[in-house]
Image (cartoon, rainbow, N blue to C red):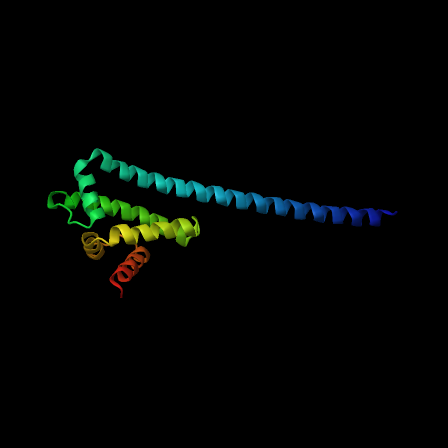
Length: 158
């Protein structure tokens, strides 16, 4: 065997080494992406838990939320504070929507939150009115606003 043959064998071995390295990196990147998605989903759920815990310590807020859940009118003395709380919930939904648009969270995770936003919050007439009026102050991104408007149309059957 001459040196040219040894060099050719070494080059083939080197090529296999490069391929193995690329495959290893691909697996690591995929694993890292899954970990990052799980971490983002956990952080967002933590934000929801923090807001939900506010109701535990605030009787009037809890009562307003109960009214919403039962389809009753939100008490006037609590309405402004409750709608501020709703605005914070919708900020979290906007964040999740943005993550979804950038493929940073799973589609299933986003779809569950989208359905919750529509069926629990926007289905209530007072929240729906708040949503329609919130566009005047430009509180949300246009992309999220378009989504919310689509959800309201779904609820209205138009």
